[in-house]
Image 1 (cartoon, helix red, strand yellow):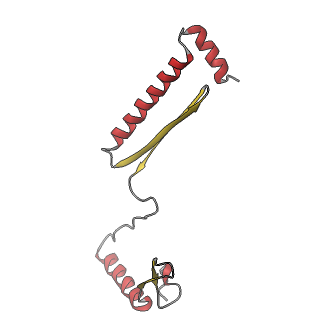
Image 2: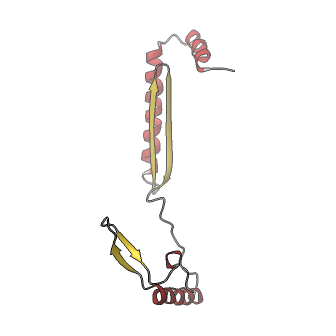
Image 3: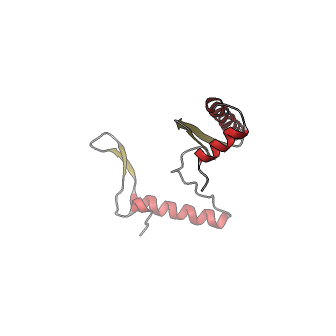
Amino acid sequence: MLTFRIAGMALAKLVPTSWPAARFAAAATLSVMTLGVIWSSAYADGMAVGGCVGSQGSLSCVARWGEAGDPYVRKVPEPADEVERARSAEREHKWQERCRPTIAQDRFGVPRYQYAAPGCEFGIIE
């Protein structure tokens, strides 16, 4: 198994550079690559997050790109045609009539939805 120490010793024999210079070059290269990812993703309606950590003889960098925004918000597709729109509006109306949602503060002052019927928080109509 080839470890970083063995690879470093082999590289030191081939390339006459010092370890601090090699570490600096690796960190600079990875930083430029991370900045490139961040700048290119800024125009792609996304978000990049990355960073590097290191200590004696080791360096680890990572970059992650993903959609910008809240990952916990799910986008519901719009109804495809008029029949589907009418069915969706009827379902919404039935739910509103049965559940009568209101917003009230709990004992910690956090606004919470309250419903007139059980199961409404899960979208149950009947």
